[in-house]
Image 1 (cartoon, rainbow over the protein chains, first blue to last red):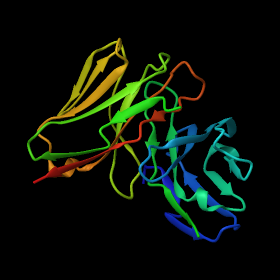
Image 2: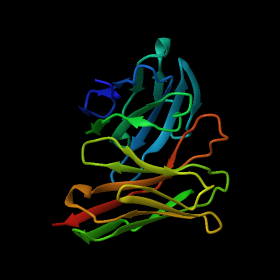
Image 3: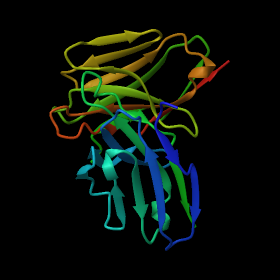
Image 4: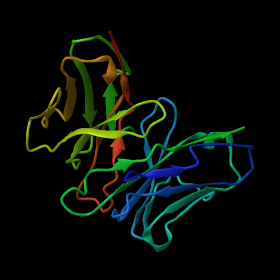
Length: 115
Length: 114
């Protein structure tokens, strides 16, 4: 499989619980992004990694959110003390530097429902 | 502040017709304008993209028209097919920025009737 892989595809949790999502980018891609998409909206940028370094975080990313990319490979996004407003599709995307570095490849996302 | 405005919100077209989706942007630093196609339960997939040094780009049935002075760009789908039924997002990026992040419009739900 050469695409961006996200796990789980769906997550239902109760308010106040912690959740963690995983993203496996395309293997040679050094850039990794997390986006959030709510119903009827376009994806909104959350954070960006180049290799293992987290280089930018959106103001949308409250202190309850944390993302890591150890060793510059897969990435995890953790949400602590989930709130109903966190319900959304969380999308991961990756790209590589070079001539085709503009093209972002998205995974199928993790749909989070906070009850 | 919505930096990329997309219209219409939804569009119904008959098979064989032309689908037209419009976007307008505010940030003159944007210099890369892709269109993404998203099917239910899937992530967005790049369809076609343009840079502002050209006014039009065509790939198969898909064409982007770009008007730099008006800060507008549009997607035209010729000979629309039921399989084109999906949500389409325009996006924009400032390639001079440090992270290549995309700013997306709110999307257009296209339905192509057989």
